[in-house]
Length: 369
Image: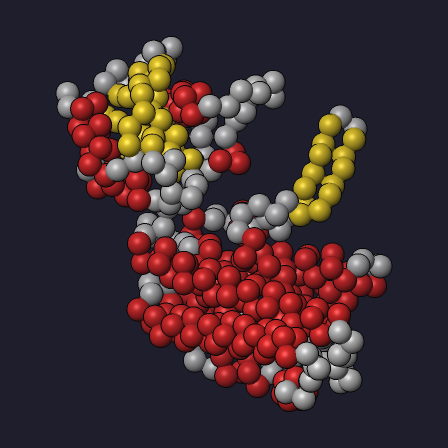
């Protein structure tokens, strides 16, 4: 490693703080300087350091600047690691944080092999994931728009007499609401338009996902995992987009931990305390799995919609899905009989759903040699 240099990058929108560490053990670690966060400056910097044939090992924290820097450095032949920020070792007594110190720390830890890399998706996968996350954002905006409308009606004593909101009957009732002052009527109509526009946005993005899915390399996995009860199209495409390659997990427990569905634990001496789930990883994938897990509170059966989804799938996939449904329906009843809250039982079912999804995905895409 005499000719190797480990480079820590603290990346921001306009600048990159750079620190270098010599490859030998105990070698020099120093702050190199700051360069503009532009492709031409990054290329010149890499050419300057690697001009004598030295191997360069870059690293930077995953963050809002994305993976463009990683792709640029790997394309010109250098190794680059995108680091998981939550897994960087931090000294408990260190209270000073600057760009310079962060870059030096990254270079030093990278040389010591103490950093954990995140998986960098290819450009096509990242594009699909962006589209799915845009739909999730549209769903949240729709919920907020509905909440604003209902809050406005509640403030003025306009209460819907029916049982359930946002049905056709509820929307017809909205057209009958009248206010004496014109300004309030304008506000009502504006809130209604906001809800309508947000719902139309969801429909547009859902259609775009469905249109682009056949060209995606992970489309067979999306189709296969829909054999699971509670895993319809949106849930399936969301989980697959957030997880990516299921073959990087050697067992389902690793996938459960990656999705933050495993209980937290504090073990010290004779004291053992277990808390709620860790909530690590993708909150979006975790949320859709928990929403899908609510379907297992009913008895095990194959509905018409589920039958339509599994008819064209291999028998081995259908067997795994049915085995999982039998187990999880029984598991839910057992947890409820022991007095567990519904939220705790549903989260436990979501954790087991992740395991069966892992098994189906591995069946469809066997591990490469």
